[in-house]
Length: 310
Image (cartoon, rainbow, N blue to C red):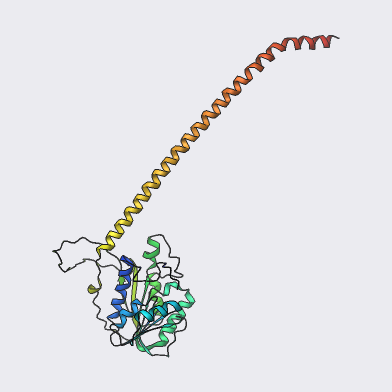
């Protein structure tokens, strides 16, 4: 991993606002399901999320293919119950049926279909029979199609039904959670705790990200989703600033386009006037020649007749 921040890996010191909230929420959800368990955080990146899991788990291993990321994570977060390894999701470096939980957030869409299948096989191999997979991915219908844009780092994204079928090929019990941004206005006393009520949640098809909790045994997960809600006014102001900046750029581009159009019209008019002037000049130049032709027309005719008479 280079030192240059691309926006695709989560770096707490670089990320703010929406992206930070998304990562924090996912790991706080997973942390409610790993208490006293042996956990793998696959494709852990910089390692911050693994450290959140380690607050509750018995043991956490963060796995990433980037050697520099692994070294930095061990230096920054490593302790007796949290370590980081270099490795690939195509071949997880663990014995069969040795892990209680595998966590994989925003990983599966970064690889092609064959590696996706191989990764799922590897997850099932290393999980205990009663183990749990917690996996998230963007909902292509909202993340990509709705905004008519593509993430250049994503190889194969999932629609909700595709994601369900993909996980359902190996797991018999699945719970799905919807992750999405929302905006609101509040009136509170100073330092008052918020008691937030949202009359309508979103379906999986409407959410930006889908988080799946999968197992091959019935699940009794008690996840406090209300406690995961983040209302950060800085995100609103950042979006507002971004929108205003885009509006300013659009107005500037519009003004420049109008100025260019006016310059083009002026240039066309100048060209028309120049052509008209050239035509006038040409007409003036032709006048003396016309008079000369008229002057010599009769003498020439006389000479022609004389020649014929001979």
